[in-house]
Amino acid sequence: MAADEALAQNAVSLYERLGPQSRARSQLLAWLATAAQPAGLEALSRLLIDDPPLEDEDIVQALPPLFTARKYRMEALFPQLLAALSNPALAAPVLDLANYLTRNKLVSKHPGEERKQELIGLLGRMAESLARMEERPTELDESAVELSRRVASSVALTVSLCDALAQIGDDAAIPKLYQVLDLGHRRLRTEAAAALAKLGEQPAVTALVQLAAEPVARLRAIAYAAELGVTDKIDAQYRTPQARAEAELTVWLAEPTQFGVPPTQCELFDQRRQFWPGFSELVDCFLLRFSYTITVEGGERTYSNIGIAGPLVHAFTADLADLSPDDIYAAYAGWQASHEDIFEHDVSRLSRTEKLEVVRLERRLHDAGYANIRPQQMGYFFGERALTALADHATLAGVAVVDFQDIVFLPQRNSRRPLGVREVYSIYKGRKLLRTFNRGE
Image (cartoon, rainbow, N blue to C red):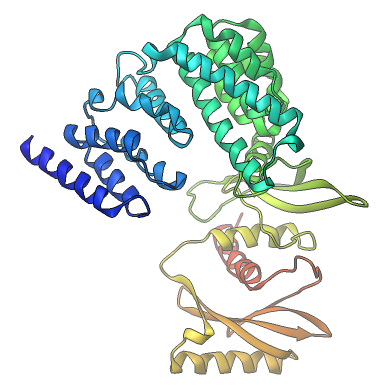
């Protein structure tokens, strides 16, 4: 215990000496959480409440280790850590931790139960704020980036509050949860419907079942329906592998790091069951064409592409519309491939001996009729070397990949989002991998 206290005191002293501007403070907090010792956790709570890091990203790094740490004394964190509810950046992570501990029966009751009236009031305020943002977003004196960050923060906290109040189980929360259910945001409506259903509200069960029709809400709606034992109430068409794949890609596209909103349309482009790198059994693979319709000055603009769901969920920025389904699958398989014998280096980083290989492969392209050859990278694929280069062939500009047996060339037909070096080399790798894995199928 004395050693624990000494380490905690040293960590606090260093934290204070680093000062508010230091980004290293978050690493100290994460270290205290990872150690999960009583004195360290008490110090962690005090620092988060009294002197948190300045950046929101640094604040939220402190708590994740506690979701996977070995057993620790909960009283070292709660209820005092709930004082952080007044900090917008900390409120959601703190509630998420409390919800996690309760759900996994690591505490006898929800740490926020004694403050449930405060949580109910906070939920009401969040619902009102979000409703104003939905109804009159242009009245807010904020940039698009600031508004997006505020919405994301508000959504995260509201989701955590819905979960917490459902686990606490007080009917006093029902009116505020219905306020959230009335919002337009489908993730929030799903969370509110699930919380209300857990509190015995039958209209909320109906709402939850209906939300399964919305791809962006489908996966959570199905998961909550299973938890509540009402899966059979969801239409079978929304529980098929294709429907789940559509939902997976839609949710991925709607993430803030991607488009931030779900696509206007998402439909099946191709489906097949095949062996896939990294899987020992056959995998259901889905290619989905998605599109966004954006209103701009002078009319509407449409953005579309083809993404994948099943073995992975991803979409390239480069336009894949001109490719065959085989090559689209290959692009994603090659992009995802991870192995110590598969890697690439920019040609500028190569040794003198490796640059001689570049010259030999460049000569192969030249002899095959390619012109204006500009080497970009050398790929190493299980001992085989392949040069990727920008080149012209038959009056078409494009990207070529050449090894000592084959040449792959794909023209850059789409001038706005053409295939680049990464995508074409991914197709080269993916073709080889999928042929090998599916030989004889």
